[in-house]
Image (cartoon, rainbow, N blue to C red; front, side, top):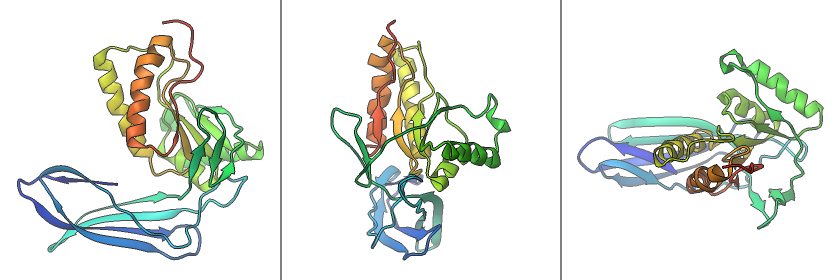
Length: 248
């Protein structure tokens, strides 16, 4: 899905192109291009790329960490208007309804790993420190890390993509939080933003929308966030809240 913003007052004729290029393995590239009309304001465009012989992303203890570079280009008769690139992986997730029996690419996941907070001040973190921490997890035979009540720097998720460590991602809420209508509206905006910021990381397989929430938070705040998260990303596992505490 591509989000386009036409800041003019007229309909624009543009071409949108999407290219997938193998980033860390030898393989064929895939691309599409389509002409569209974009009305004034914000538009969401679905773009589907057929990938022959897709190379899947796996956790380190189950297979290879195949990654693709994706580039989206918007152009008109005058040339390129905008371009964005990112790295991503192809993988399929499935959960048996009503259980925590989960599968990746048709193979069952047996997750094991720690809660993780990198530093009190994330500005002190570097890619090298993240690489060391994730390598320690692998050497301890762990295949998943729970990013505990924070959103880490982008480098952590890049490293987990490359090293094949699954990510259980918390929304930064815990225990008692406000569940007023104004707070819920602001939290929903932040939740949607986090999902879209981290969406392309194949290592992330779970969104958790509350750490040990109070009952009212679980029923209101966490539910609101989970519903918004599913709208933005219906393809990952969702936990409304973990270890609900017995107070309001």
